[in-house]
Length: 197
Ligand code: IMP
Image (tube, rainbow, N blue to C red; front, side, top):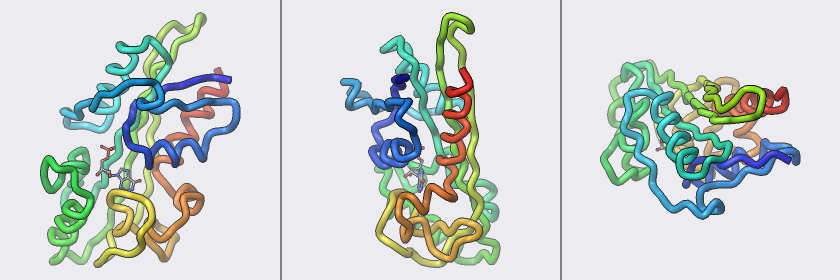
C-alpha cells in the first residue's frame, strides 16, 4: 500500500478524497501526520498555491505528498473570486460572507455561468525517476443559483449547481457530488497516474 500525505487541514476535502481512493492507497491528512501548520496561499494562481503547500510539507517530512487548491471562477466577474475564493469577503474565510458577496456581485447579471477548478500538485519520488513534481487539473462547469439551497458540503456548495444537475452541491450526498466534482476529476487523474507508476 502507498502512503501519501495530503497537505490540507480541510476535513471536508479529506473526506471527499478518501471516498474516491481504493484500498491500495492510504491518505494521511496533516493532523494525522502530526503537522500543525496553516500553510499560506499567497500566490496569484491555483498552481503556485498548490505547489507552495506541497513543497512546504515535502520539505518538512521528506515523504511523498500532494496538495490541492480550488477556486470558483465566475464568468460575469472575470473569473473572480478565483484564486482568492477562500478570502473573497475578507481574511476571516467565512463561508456565509463569501456566498453573500458572490450573490450581491451577481445581482445585476444575467450570465451566472461559473466553474470550480481544482489543481493538484504531487511531489513523488521513486528510485527510477527521482523526486518529481506533477500537476493534475479538474474542472466542473455549472452556474450560480440566485439563493442558497441545501445544508450539506462546504464553502460555496449551497449556491453552485453543476451542469446536468437540478440541485446544488449542498443538496447532494458526497457520492452524488463526486459524480460531477472538480476535485473528483483531478483526484481520478492523480490516482491513475500513481497506479501507472
Ligand atoms: P481552498 O482550495 O481551500 O483555498 O478553497 C478556496 C475556497 O473555495 C474556500 O472558500 C473553500 O471553501 C471553497 N471551496 C473549495 N472547494 C470547494 C467545493 O468543492 N465546494 C464549495 N466550495 C469549495
